[in-house]
Image 1 (cartoon, chains in turn brown, blue):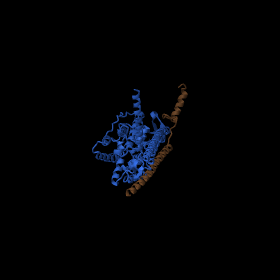
Image 2 (cartoon, chains in turn purple, orange):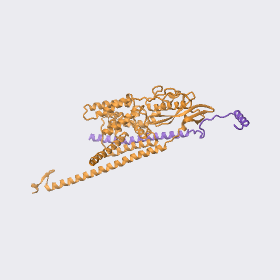
Image 3 (cartoon, helix red, strand yellow):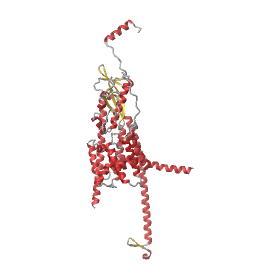
Image 4 (cartoon, one colour):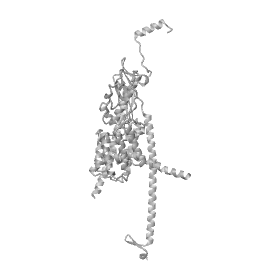
Length: 79
Length: 433
């Protein structure tokens, strides 16, 4: 009689264990998925897209250099 | 006449003809029951075969979905490696240049390393003198609790300031984060690869030659091999001191593989295998030994030596069971339901991992929570529940929640299917001969 009651209690314990265990595991997985989605959303927010056409950084000429080049072109049109 | 021709059955006098009729009826009923039982068994087998085929289809579909969905937006994280940069431009050889005004402050390259959950992409910024000036993790597949541990311990700051000409190897000039060795190694390897790539292609520096990877075969690997061999030996019926050996193996495993190394078989490793994130065997030999050991023992003997004998978490439950007098409690009413709940949960975990291409995202085991005391609230609750139940029920986690158990059932099922085909093939061959 006592062992029957014991077994019944153990049965109930197992039922509670399984239901609670599945619920807690699902919560854990859900939290991980939420963190992963947050991380992807944050990555998209801080995205910096480089200029499309720019492949190699080209040097820029100052105003004086531009003037010298323009004068040179005028004096030597074939170059 | 009746009295003379009959006999007593159950204290009641019955004629021979009545007795014969009853026996015939019982035989018929028995045979009917037998036929029904065989039909039920065959129906069950058909359903199992159908569900196994459906599982394989779902796994392939999830893998394909995850593969299509994966984003290659690596460039989005470059600014995080060099926060001071005002603009980032793509340069030769797949690298980027970070500018502040007219001043070049760093080159950035994305290096790949192999973490616990698979490949990790790290954006590494190197200044014009060749020193690592910044890093950002672009993509990782680590189990969240382990990754959090690495970030909380500011592991990245241990690498920043190192030069491309440094050794940059875990254990040599960079210390790992305790309990997150694989993640630490992945980050360091990525930093080394990226910084040397920049030094060679952008800074025109001579980089140290690529060293052959050293094979990591230390105490954990030796211990694992020894445990497998002894576990198989202890399962032999003829072995005399089976029980004592089993307990010795169990306790050694719980202490060493559990508390010291915290290196258990998890659903993450299986997800990693399915995703194709097979790491370098030189540095991850333990992983190969564990997976191959489990698969081999399952396929050859039909028994999972790891789970039955030396899984550290199983051992911990069994130890608690010894304290509380735990016994296996059969629950015929709910046995099938609980079995299929466990299988469904494990399958869902695998499918989620394949879709997100992150082996650790759906890992719900609480091994780290017990052996390292690291985890979130729900994990600690679950651990408490397992501890309490283990006192009265034999290995409750293994029997009702562990995702490895359905994996083991699946392998056994496939093994039996192949075994079922093979003898038929042999019979047909001998007939034809």
